[in-house]
Image 1 (cartoon, rainbow, N blue to C red):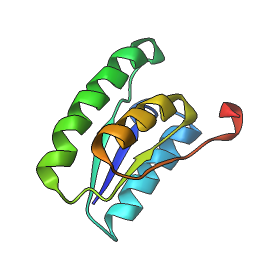
Image 2: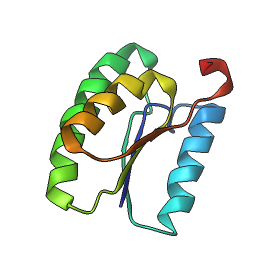
Image 3: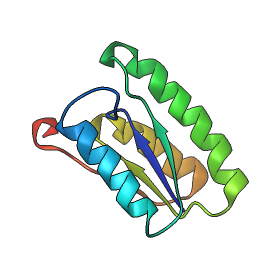
Amino acid sequence: MILFITRKHPPSVGGMQKLSQSLTKEVGRLTPTSTIFWGGSTVFVPFFIVYAFVRALFTVPRSNHVKLIHLSDALLTPLGVVLKTLLRVPVVVTVHGLDV
């Protein structure tokens, strides 16, 4: 299973949101997935990061099937480093043009 963690997801609007939604949907047709997402204001992103961290800590060990964690943008990279270290699951990050 792939665990997607994204802070750019509908109902908020934009290209990153569309990409995130399409990626999780299409990959979900090929393999089991789970998604932790935030589709609201960027003002609350610090709270989302804490929420995503706690939720991932409970999701990964319980499923024993999570083989990969995918983060939707560079802002979530520190979260990925911590999750990889604690959970021993590979982490990948999609970096978008304006993130660089």
